[in-house]
Every structure is written in structure tokens, then in C-alpha cells.
Length: 328
Ligand code: TXA
Ligand code: MG
Image (cartoon, rainbow, N blue to C red; front, side, top):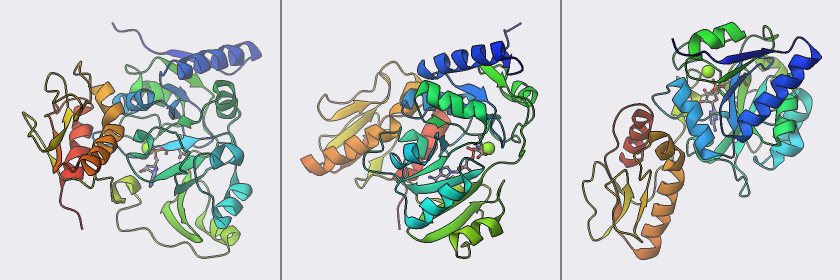
């Protein structure tokens, strides 16, 4: 029998101390931890660490990289990562800490994993109300990427037991804070300048947000409520992308994988060891770097080595296919 995850409750001061110490250690080591928030349980990892973020996707078994919510302590921490317009500021002041997520343009100094935004120019930010989540963010000194702590395709967990049923075999630590008070996910709004679009209804009612924002919320694009991340214009390099390349042509930059590595100086390897978690962690930053190299050296495009379609390889191939498809 495989060993299940450690589950630490928050019932006594001693358990709280142990939970905070254990979760902090895991976050700093790059390991995902399931934590309670006031909405649903989240699977948290260091949002500045590409590899830690890749391990969230791996644990959830997501077939594609949806962007993740980054949890911050407060608006001051959030300002480092997202550009706050006047309306965004008003909403954060009114509803944080609490179940509101703001999708904002990434700041130029953002420094968070590109994988957390799934390559988009925006970042989803939320300051949770849950005391444990707050303590962990402050104790680790890191913003925490955290999607709901369930396997892809199943419903969001509102108890530690739900998390164990869904992800038990794939994570090492679950913090049990009892049932979640709100019980539905945060409301997600995208703020572009003074425009506010409702991407996902949730713990704070639309009318309340509209009242504070002083304007009606715009409707999302069709289907955006189920999967807002998938509806965004995805990141694509300016240079054309050739997939499944067995070798690098003279006028190409090369995105290698495993032993198919390309020419030094004109190639980057997603993972020389053929490790799909490492490959996911490198995907967006390598694509950007090779795109810049094409522009600088006048190369015709980027060729990408084949990536096996298993584990995180499925999500990597999904993103590569989108990046390679003709754009409007
Ligand atoms: O209450 C919640 O929001 C919970 C707790 C753990 O905080 N989290 C949660 O995360 O529900 P998740 O990953 O299950 O849902 C996040 C949603 C996804 O549908 C994703 O597409 C969207 O947020 N999202 C994240 N970043 C985005 C972005 N830059 N643009 C558009 N949508 C984004
Ligand atoms: Mg979810």
C-alpha cells in the first residue's frame, strides 16, 4: 500500500504551529501543499518558482495549462505583480481579504512564474480571508499559486477529506482547517483600465461588485465562465513554430527535449533529462527567449522537438499546438 499524505489539523495551538512550520517548509522546498481558504481548499505552491508551479499542474492532472490564481497577503504585496487601475484599487480595498479575484495586467517587475499566467500578460490575484492562508503567505514570504485542490475535472473540495479523496496519492501534506465557510470559489473579474468583466461568478455577488465599482459588469465571452483561461488569446511567439522537429534547420532556433537538443547558441532544451515537470517549468520562458533570438538573429522560426504526450506532456503539447496555430 502506498503511504497517504500527512494531514495536520488546526484544532490546537500545537497543531497550528506544526501545520504552519510543515507547510512553510514544503512551500520553500517547492512542494505543493493543500491548504484551507474561506472559499475552497487550494493546492498551493511558490508562485515565483516555475518548477513548483509545474508540480501543481502535475498533481491536478490538468491536460492543459489554465492560468492559476496567485494568493497574496494584501494589496501592497499584490501591487508588485499586477497593475492596479483606480477601479481595481477600489475593488481590492472593498473586498480584500475575501473571495474576490482580480485579473490584472502583469507589472513589468512581476517576477512570478510565466507558467502561473499560462503565458498570458495578465495575472489573477486574490488576498484570502482565511487566517491560515494569510499566516502561510507571510511565514513563507511568498505569493502562493493555488487552484482548487481537486483533480482536473472533478468538483472543488470544501473539506480536507475531499482533498484526500481527490489528490491523496499525489501530494504529501494536507492542512485540515475544517469545512470552508464560503464553500464556492471566489468571484473572478478582469479589470482593464476602468472596464470590469465578470469571468466567473462566485463568493461575492455581481451586484455588490457593480455597486462598489460604480458600473455594470461586462459579460464574458461565451463559455468563459467554465474556463476563462482557455478563452484568452494565448501566448504565441511572433516567429512561426514548427512542431515535432527531428532536427534543426540552418535558419531556425530550436526548442529541444531530451536527446534532441539542437545547436548550442541557437537552442534551448526544455529538459535534457527528458523530465516533463522540468519541461513544463521551462516552456513559456524558453519560448519567449527563442522568439527574441529569432528577432535578434533574423532566424525564420522556431522548431520544437517532439514531446511525449503523457503526464504533463499533454499540456505542453496543447500549448505548443496553440502557439503554432495560425493567428488572427
Ligand atoms: O476561490 C478560489 O478562487 C479558489 C481558492 C483556492 O482560492 N481557487 C480556484 O482556482 O478556484 P482555480 O484554478 O480552480 O480557478 C481559477 C480560475 C481558472 O478558471 C482560470 O482559468 C482563471 O481562474 N484565471 C486565472 N488566471 C487568469 C487570467 N490571467 N485570465 C483569465 N482567467 C484566469
Ligand atoms: Mg477549480
